[in-house]
Image (cartoon, rainbow, N blue to C red; front, side, top):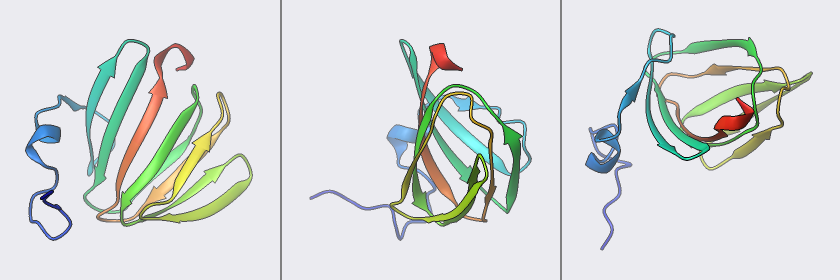
Length: 113
C-alpha cells in the first residue's frame, strides 16, 4: 500500500525532505532541489502568498501539486490548480502569484538557464 501525504501535517515525505534546501530569495517561498547532469528538479512550497516577478531563463515544465497559482507566460495569464501542468519555452518572460499552501514540481534544463 502506498501512503498519501494529502492529509498529513508533514509538508513533504522524508525522501524529499532529504533533498538539499535551495535559497529562492523570496520570503515564504521554500524549495528543495535535485541536480542530475544537465537537469534540475525543484519542489517548492509557498507558506503565504508569493508574487514572483516577471523574469526569464531556459525552458521549464511544471506541475501544481497543491493549491493554486496565477501564471503569466508572455501576455497570457491563466489559473492553475492541483494536477495542472504548464510549459514555459526558453527565454519567454513569465511571472506568477502563488497562493498560500501552493506546492509545485518543476523541471529545468541547466544548459538553458
